[in-house]
Every structure is written in structure tokens, then in C-alpha cells.
Length: 453
Image 1 (cartoon, rainbow, N blue to C red):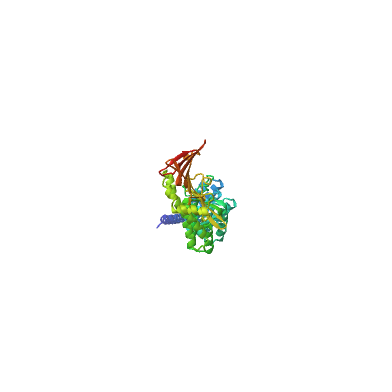
Image 2 (image 1 turned 120 degrees about the horizontal axis):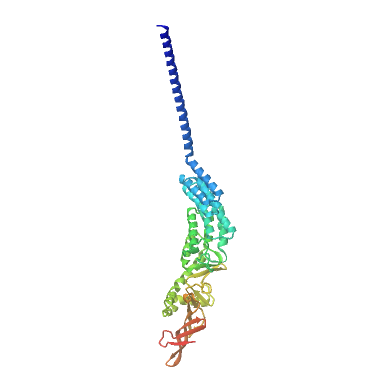
């Protein structure tokens, strides 16, 4: 082998070695690049996954809510909280944040609703405790502002339903009772007050204040039956009996009230409701007794009133009224009976009732009066009853008044005046010009006569 051939082989070997080194470097570079790329992918993916976690999504929306609150854009702040809850309906932070937004915009009721909704969903006790604290704080604010109402009482009872042993609840219940049920007079149980107003927050469908009171009493009874604490029992008995001098009622709710007193007595009232219950029983009896008289008068056919005047129940009322022995029913020169309103009064520890007349309740549909003149005719006690209907079309005039008397008076028989017991029916019509009366003597008898004056 000559020198040229040896040199050529060396050069070829060197070239092969250089190519081999280049391939190794390329392979290493590829491996390094692959490792770098994998690291980038893993690192970027981790960041993506981190930012996609539900906690971070919720945090970003709550941060947005805070920013909206700063600019007083409360609706957007609430919407951001709702979006957080759509991500996780069990987020305690989101419920608390939303309640905070409502408190900032001074909507305490909405804040309380959110906290309670959060507790119902999550069963987180801290939300429930915060809800109760807000309820009681609201009740304190109402009381301090002089705005105590049945709605204030409801806040206390709502907190009591969550913790029947909460001493703060009982202190506030006492404060509510003092402001709602003590004083000279209350119309708390009436739908519409004398001035035409209505308690704020009460329904406008005619259910009125008594329905709210009944609901709250039943809720307290339910709490007691679930956990019969003596302290709660005392509150229930106390709230069952108003301590006002006069309590106005819509007569249609008397039976409901009596039923409630029966439920309260069943838990053991130690006789504290006996007097009031007996008074209500008498009022319901009077209401039932005069229902027939109202039916007669409202029909316009007055003839049957003579039988009512001679009924045992009516004569009992009249005789007791004249003798001053009428138990629980209060009256002076006459006893009014109406269908819409009545009042309970308490004096010297004794309850009495009376129905409203037109002076006390001008909107009455009609008023019956039992007159108690102590006068006998030929040994027979005179009977007198009158009926005053509501003005026609709510106009003051003309105004009618009908009076029916069973008495001993002259009846003209064959031109001769003969005294005997008979019915007299007088109709008085009052107009702007004055009053005109028409009297029918021996009304319904064979010697009936008429006179006007």
C-alpha cells in the first residue's frame, strides 16, 4: 500500500469520526430540547390547572364582587356572588359575601334570607348563628326606634326556632310584649285601623294582623312541643292574653281566638286563661243569638222580629241587662250588637266584651240595640229593640232607624180607645231638613193604625 492510499484511508476514518460526533451532538440536542419542551408543557399545564380550580374561580368572582361594592354597583356584586355559588353551591364564603353586599346596601331582610338559605344548603352552623344574630339585632333596632310590630316579634320567634334556649330571645320577647300588648287600647288584632291605616308588612288580602298573630303563636307552640321549656311556656301563656285595657277584635275571629286559648290551656296555664275564655264564650253566644235578628232586619221583612223579641234567649239578655246581672257583657242605657267589630275590656282583673256601635265603628253594616227600660205594662215587662242600618250608598242622608216595642197602649176598636198589650213599629227617617217618623200601632194586629209626625 503506497503512501497516498494510507493517507486517503486516514482521511476517510477522520471524516467518519466527525460525522459520528455530529450525530451524537444532534441526538443529545434533540433529547435536551425534548426535555425542555416537556418541562414547559408540564409547567404551563400546571399553571392552567391551578387557575382552573373551583376555589380560584370562586375567589376571582368574590374579588370582583368586592370591586363592584367599592363602586356601589351592588347588583353586579350580587350577580358575581351568584356566579360563585353556581360554581359551588356549598361555598360558605360566597353566602357570607352576598349577605355582606345586602347589608352594605341596607337590605337587612335580604341578607338574613341569604344566610338562612346558605345554612339550609350547607348546614354550616356559623351561617345559622350569624342569621340568628342579625334577626335579633333587627328586633333590637325596631324596638329602639319605636317601630315594634308583629314583624319584630316574628324575628324573635324565628331565632327561637333555631335555638329555643337562647336567653337573648326571651329578653326580646318580653320587650315586644310590653310594646305590643300593654297600654290603654290596641287594635293589633284588626285588619284595618280606625284611621284607615294598616300595619306595615301586613297582608292586603283581608287576613290582617290577627292572622299574623295566630301564625306566630302556633309557631311558638310548635317550638314548645319540640322542646317543652318552662321559660317558653310562660311566654306563650303571656302572649295569649293581651294586657291592654281595651282590645279591639273583628268578630269573625272570635272562634279562632277561643281555639287558640284552648291550645295554650292544654300545655298547662294554671287557670290564667279561664276568665278570658269564659268571656269569649259569652261573646260567641251573643253573636249566635243575634244572628237571626240580623237576618230578619237585612231581609227588609220585619214581621218575624216579634217572635225573636219573645224568644227565651232575647228575654234573658233583656232581663239580665235590666237587673244589672249580665255577666261579661257590658252596656249602659242600651246594649249595641254589630257584626263587624267588638272590644274586650279588662277592669279590676275581670274581662268584659261589648259590640261596637256607629260611634265606635262608623263602617258597621248595621247596629241592633237592646233597650233596657225597666217598665212594666199591666204586669208585663216592656220589650224594646231597635235597628239602625248603615247609610245608603255611604251617604249621611237619608238615615233610617227602626224601633219595635211590645207595650201596653191604646188601640182604637170600633171608635173606642182600648188599652191592651200590642206591638208598635216606628220608622224614623232623618234628612238634612229634619226627622220624620211613621208609627204603626197594633202592628200586625187586626186594629192596626198609622200616624206620622
